[in-house]
Structures are given as structure tokens and as C-alpha cells.
Length: 203
Image 1 (spheres, rainbow, N blue to C red):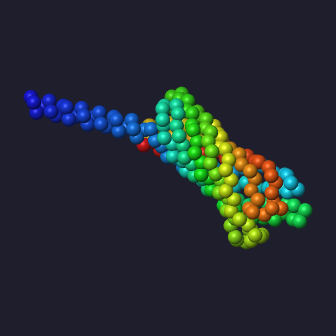
Image 2: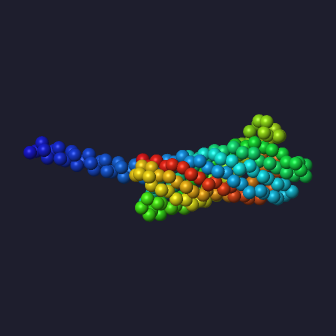
Image 3: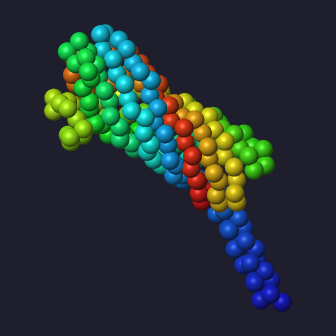
């Protein structure tokens, strides 16, 4: 009888540990997404900047503080061409650039069964690095690191307790880059729009 009680106690302890571990694990998730990059035309200080639209990828880690509140870390990557026009370059001068995003955000979640809308806001930086290849028409360029504000909204659809699909709009407000060339300074801010579709894994 004592042996049976011990087995029951051990079984209960294992089930409790599994439940606690599951509760702890379900507070975290990682996601991988495809993103679009869309930037407006920027005019200022006798300079004009146009950015080619492109696609990239986003990786995120989210930690749930409460069922509604979470903290998120993001890294995104994309490549595109910036075209600058000034009085010296009326036909435009192209700079092929690599964009990397490093941001942190607060996420507010709402839960409606399988559908979970969310809002997010945060800060971070865009690292814009000129790529010296045949698409870049000047070598007199420098890397820009621009600090700005992240904001967005989206919805997650739960496929299972471990997976969901996320669709969201992300925007990043930052000062337009000039890649170290004074004639390319617009002295204006722009919002880079990044619609996103991806899959998240909860663990």
C-alpha cells in the first residue's frame, strides 16, 4: 500500500512539474516572417530620396509578462536601392543598401479564442550599410545608424497550442539617411512601412 502511495505521489509530482514547465514554456515564442519594405518619397533641403520597394525577412522573440502584456525583440534584414536626386545629380544617383533592424517593443495582446489581435510600440535602430557593387554609383558613402520609433498592429490566428500565423503592419519612423554625403541630406523624417506575414512557435 505504501509503495502504491509513493507511486501515486511520484506520478502527481511529475504531472505537476509538467504543468508548471508547460506554463513556463508557453510564455515564450519565436517567429519568422516575410516582410515588405515600402518607403515614401522624401523631399527636403534641395534633395530628393526615392527607395525601391522590396521584400525581406523578420525574426522575433516574444516573452509574455502577463496574458495581455509582452516584451519583444526584433531583427529584420532587407536589401534595396536608394536613389538620390539633387541639382548635381538631376537624373539620380543610386546606392545599393543593406537594411538591418534591431528593435525592442512592448506588445499588448487581446484574446478572442483562436484570434488574438495585438498592438506594439517600441524603439530601436536601423543600420543602413551601402553595398559596394555595380548597383552603387558612388564609393564615397558611409554606414548610417538611425534611431527611431517602431509601432504596429496585427492579428495572430492560433493553429494549435504551439503554432500561430501572424499578419501585421509595422511602421518605423526615422530620419532619412544620407550615407555620409552632405548633398543628400533631406533633414526630413520618413515612415518605412513593413507589412508582415509569418509563423510563430510557442515554447
